[in-house]
Length: 200
Length: 141
Image (cartoon, rainbow over all chains, first blue to last red; front, side, top):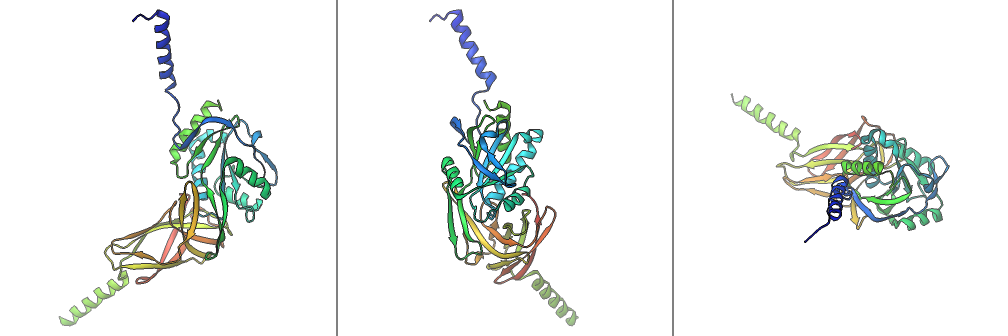
């Protein structure tokens, strides 16, 4: 079988390119979406009463998490892990924006949300809105948030909810999910990848 | 010499009673920082190395409005919390783990802020052992 010089150089070039790229990045903390799409818009109100628009958050990696302040385990664990990841990123941590969206607007006032997220990281943002505004966001991200009465608990009710973190890159594309319970080092590695790729 | 032996036996008996007949051990008790009015969770491990079977009946904390034991259930990525109403058995050589992501001691309506470095007093009530004071460290993880 005969291969021309051009063909041989092309094959060598492709192999070198693959080696140089190291192959596709393997997302460690959850799942990388097959096709990144523009993240569904989020227009809500932050803890200071100011409007927050997701599409205006370009240039940073935004991590959306849906939770509530009376959640004693899943939410604080996730927020503590994200705070630890930001810290481990050093100065690159400034390129990460963590946003908590409440699934319990009846109890989570902006003031309460603000005080809550501040216990994890002073840069964290907490969002709320009207029931209709929040439901639209839950729906667009496929978030389950079900109020469940717990008559035998002083809590009165709790909220069953998704515990994944939705990763939006610097260009506003929904790129990946971070699974509940992911190792902090895996989260850090993935965020470093996103920061270095610059949203491309 | 006989009174000495009697005294020694009494001392041993008293020492055993002081240790608790069941020899329960509570380790690694901690809670996260929290703001007054919010809910927190306490994590710890109760071990029963060689003692008689025992039961954890309830937990009390003066800094919380209510204390309950809850567990977390993962249903296809949706997290559900459910209270556990009954006592918890701790068989001989067994243990109960209250840990992040699983069963936890829920502290509802905290009456004070907790910051890293603080401590929180809990009282665990056991069927055989009776009340046990536990000091939980406040830390991030």
